[in-house]
Length: 206
Image (cartoon, rainbow, N blue to C red):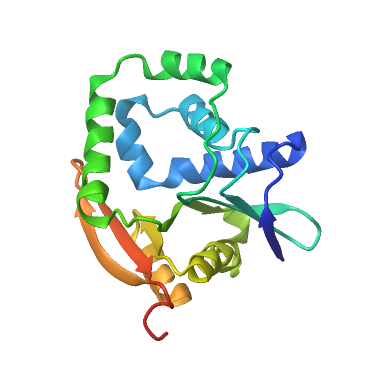
C-alpha cells in the first residue's frame, strides 16, 4: 500500500475520496450529534464536497492499494496550511441544507468550547477525520493512512492531536502511535469525544 496526497484536481480521484469521506462522516458520532435532525445523505455529501474542495492544496492524504484503489482518507490541519475560498455553488447549497437552524449553531458552539479552553495547542497538527473503506478495515490501513501526519508532526517537533468519538479508535491510536490520552468531554446528547496527543519526540513507550 502507498500513502500520498490525494490529487483533488483529478476529478476521478476526488470523486472516490468524496465517496469515502461521506461514508466516514456518516459513521462518526460527533458529526451525527452536530447535525442533529438535519442529518441526511445530502448533507453528508455536501460536507465531504466542501472539505475536499478542488482548490484545497494541503491536508488531505489517501492510502492506495497496490492496484491503485483509494481505500482511506485522512483530513488534517496545520497552522501553515493555505486557506481556500469555498465554492459559491456549494455555499448556496449549504444555506439550503442548513437554513437558519438554531440548534445546529448551538451544538457547533458547544463543540468548539472544549478545544479552545483545554486542548488547543499552538502549532499542533490535528487530524480532523480518518476514514477507511469498510472492506479494508482491520487490515492495517488506518495506521498506513495516519502515520504520515504523525511523522510530519514529529519532524516539525510539534504535537500531533487526534480526536475520536469511539473508545475503540482512541485505544487504537494509543496502540498504533503511542498516543497519550489527554482527556475527554461529553456532548449534550451524552456521547463522548476523546482527545489524544502524540507529543513532540513521540508518545509513551508502546
